[in-house]
Amino acid sequence: MKKAIEKSVRSDVPEPMPDILGTVSQAQQNEILRTFDPQAAVAEFVEKIPERERRVLQGRYGLVGGQPLTLEEIGRQFHLTRERIRQIETAAIKMLRGLAAPANFNKISDLLFQFIEDRGNAVRQEHLISSLLGERDSPSAKQNVLFILHCGPQFTFQKESLKYYESWCLAGFDQDMLDEVVDRAIEILTKHEKIIGLADLCSELRRQTEREELATAREEVIESYLMLSRTIGRNPFGDFGLASWTQVKPRDVGDKAFLVLAHLGKPEHYSKITDLINKQGFGSRIAHSESVHNELIKDDRFVLVGRGIYGLEEWGYKPGVVADIISQVIKGAGKPLTREEIVSGVLKQRLVKRNTVIVGLSNKNKFRKTADNRYENV
Image (cartoon, rainbow, N blue to C red):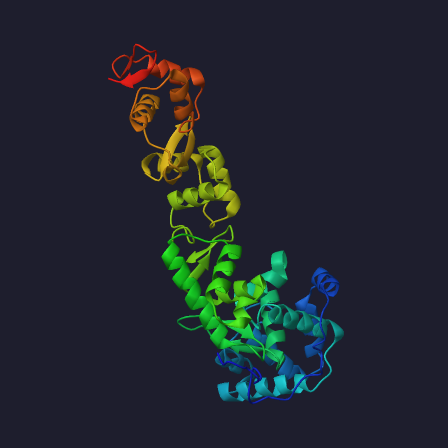
């Protein structure tokens, strides 16, 4: 990426399209999204060029079936060399850029421009496509949106690198600011050793920087830059961490259970935990309550705190049956305790009935009553 990107997508076809970069209001954006149909807009536009050029573009960009063809595959269809197909493709794009695009095509191009501009002039391609298409995402729709981007000289495609995902940028994009956001975020996350929400991460980044543009940057800009990084990841709940962390990309059922329970913030029954895992859609595999329960039992990160109810060990829950917890409460106090003090201490650790604690205190092999009606460990 360059600090200020001004070149077109293809340097060999630099002729500009008509000026269509007026600001798109939120109401206009919503209306465009409601009737968003990139396939129809592109189909109408390419009808303006000769059939051969149109078919080459349709094949090269996967405009019809959503599957782009290689130069060689298209060449076999026309009995032409790869180089000749490349020339036809270049000429066809140049031809389109010299024509007046249909209104719907321009509206979508406007919307793409506004979306990228609002996010610091750089957006990860996957995020751009998924945000605009939403539930209407399909291979064909995606390829047609990409074609609209390729047609616009105001859009510059950046290939995936070791540090960043593939993205689309506008003129004025500041590479140095992107690097600072990502590098500082990695330092912050590494130091904290835990996932951080967007608002907190933005606050920390603004506090640390001496760059005025970053100190005043909106969350949408910082968020877009963070999502460009291949080192930083975001979990299904919107929290950021290092991409290698299981709290960002859970590897097994135990990791998924930990993530949903940590987000929930309170103990829950294993069947509900299973439902939460499936609701989040961590992948195509469906979690089953038996498998989740078995994982909760054997994983030390989880503690049974009630009948089928599990909490996290990091919340301060201790393993063991009620009698073990009673013993820990008395030991932690360093002195004999009244029955009410013990009940109160145990109920902070276990979701059980009061009488269950009182029954546990009657175990004379573990506890004895003092002269002043308190209890101590045997």
